[in-house]
Length: 140
Image (cartoon, rainbow, N blue to C red; front, top):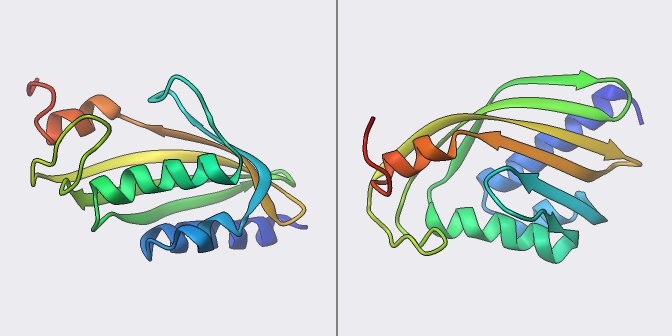
């Protein structure tokens, strides 16, 4: 696959997030996919782990939307995405009950694509900022 094919696959992944289509998301992933973030102590592995990662956020933010602000192909297997998310905290986020507060933050994903499937994703965002916005941490 070429770099533009990989960009297309990653755009489909973000479209699945925006339509809250967990199975549409999973079908673009390798069966051994790994999703990790410094927010979590362990990566989410395989289709079941990816579903868990996905559902965690769309349950907490049922109106979650990710705007792709920039997308870059890096070599023949990596895509870097700079995004902005918005959502309203209307469901539990781990052990934090819904607050009804609106959120908006920026993040970045580095996504590895091989043979038309996402094999690894590294997700970076300011979790402290998210927790401040929902009232789980004090404002600065």
